Amino acid sequence: MQVRRHQETALPQAGLDLVIVGCGGHGREIAQLVAAVNEAAGRPVWRPVGFVDDAPSDVNRKRAEATGLPYLGTLAVLGQLPPQTHVTLALGDPRVRRTVAARVDAFGLPVASLVHPDATVGADLVCAEGLVVFAGARITTNVTAGRHLHVNQNATLAHDCVVGDHVSLHPLAAVSGDCRLDTAALIGAGAVVLPRLRVGAGAIVGAGACVVRDVPPDTVVKGVPAR
Image (tube, rainbow, N blue to C red; front, side, top):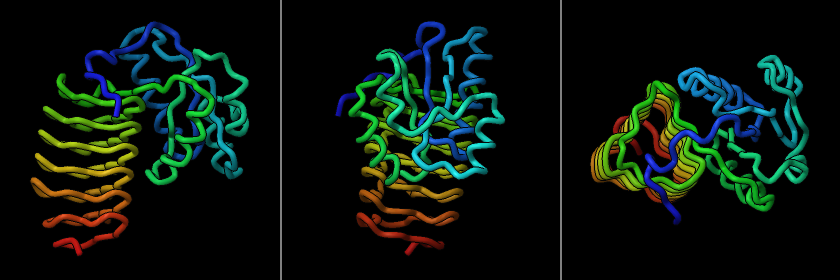
């Protein structure tokens, strides 16, 4: 896994083009995140070009275009863009994000990392490309993360965690220290993972659950305690 320290992936030079892959609600939230980054910087750090999506619903397409950004077409459009155009994956389901990431990688475009100015990210975070951190989220110290980690609004990721590729923390999820979240794990809204536990690859922790023991791969747990 190629990783870089967060301070080395600081805001890019002004005006890099950015395409949002996925024009559902998650895509519109990322569009808002990008606007917040630009506003906080006082300059156009990113120039959002529009959305791509293989099969957007009419409702999602209209809502996406209401943001002022156009729907550009299917993922095939990525092959027609200048090679310096960045992409971000706006797909809330980590399993879908993993599948789409493999397709997007084939186009060879650089992948953006986006951190909302109202989020807190430890200076010693070591992360791969595609990090998306929304408003109010907190990532503390000595965290190592893979590609396309999404930490949603007001979620927390505590000290010394190791996080695989394509992991999602939904709003208000709280992952305690020394935990391991494997590839494409999903921690649901308001769920809690207690210290030193492991959530296996592809596992889903349901909303509001409290994880008190390791979660095997490809399983769904819910409730308090989570079973």
